[in-house]
Structures are given as structure tokens and as C-alpha cells.
Length: 289
Image (cartoon, rainbow, N blue to C red; front, side, top):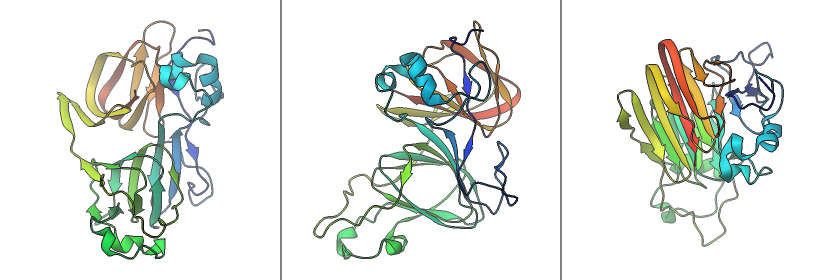
């Protein structure tokens, strides 16, 4: 296979500074140790390819090499702009975390400790609260939600998110940023779009759609065999959640392993592919538009 051939790209996970086990070593792929916290980046521009002729090369470099053939026309026309989708695994361990998003983000709950919950957004009667106070008190007024594995939360831009200890979540969307300053006197955040728990819609015998708009679609697929799929004309990721499998493609591309803890990018010009497994595999299929 030539170095110019498109093939499914398995990306190396990138541990953040606190995403380590007690010995200080990075987590093994697919493991989420208890009692630790942090963020594991599964797909960003700084990700590196794990296998194939481009093993070790950065995704940013391949964007410049392949352009729209890799990420689709929308992202390919802006090679210096960040990827339209970033995938991250977040674990709160024994410590609560407070975040705020610069753009909308999806949060798929993977695992929940007993009675763990989260708080998101602002109450509808925010105007009744004083506009100047310490953001550290935001959890006191933020609506509380019971976290349940297998559910997906959509959070509009500018909303704070408070994660209690004992949560493991898949973050799909732009990166999280530090809390912004409280709005100036006389202003308040736009509350027209509250946080929403998304109810999956059945799209097939073993498929559910969690989210879909003009920018992004997210599907959960749990199956023993999947064939006859075609990569979209935009950026597409497979995020394995449980089980082991392979991505099979026509032409010179190799068979690509699927296992939890690693994301696989399907190039926009890849064409037809199949997900194959001898058992049961569950994965998120994430497509940019």
C-alpha cells in the first residue's frame, strides 16, 4: 500500500496531565482506573496515527497532505482551523469539575458511580438572582440532573457544567474552556436554549440516533455484524465503547482493529466499508456535515 492511499486511521489516545495511574504512567488504552481524574483526548489535530504507512504522523500533517479527501470539503478548505469535531473521554474520579463551553457540546454518559449527578445551565428565573457573585457559587443555583449511563446531554454554548465525582463521559464537540467572567451588570446569559437530555430515536434494528443537526450527527450502533456502509463526504469517527471488531475496506486499505479507548477516523473519500465482529460491539458513529 502506498503512503498516499487513504485508509481508516486509528489514533493514539493522548493523556492530559492528570490522566495517569497511581504509578505516574499514562493509562493503557481502553482502561478507566477508579479514583483518578482527567481528560483523555481521542481525536484532535495533535493526535498521531497508531498504525499503517503513516504511523507516528500527526493528524494535522495529514490534513494538509490529503485535504478534503480526509476531512471533507467544509474542513478541508480551512486546513489551519481546528477540527470541527474533537473527541474526549472525561473521568471525574473523586473530584468535582466545573466547566464552561465556548460552543455547543454533547456529553454521552459512559459510567456513573452510585447516586452521582451533574448540574448544567442556569435556572429560568436567573433574573431573580444578583448578577454579581462568585462563580464558585454557581452550583448552588444550577439545575441538577441525575446521571444515567447510556444517556446523552446537549449543552448550548456559554452554559456552565458541573460534574460530580464518579462520572465517566464521552465529550463530542469543541474543547472545554475555563469559566468566563460573569456577565456585566444589567445583562444575563441567553436562556432560550436550556440543557436537554436527548432521547434516542430508533433508526434501524440495532441503531439509535442521539443527535442530528446541520453540523453533526451521532448514532449509537450495537451489532454483531454490520456491512454495506459508506463513509460520508465529511469527517467521520468510529468510537468503540464495548467489544472488539474490525473495519474492512475495499482496495489497498488494511483491516483496522476496533477496541475501546481508541478512535478511528474514516476519511471522507474512503468509500464503502464494513464493521465486523465475532461477538457484539457497540460504537458511536460521529459524522460532521
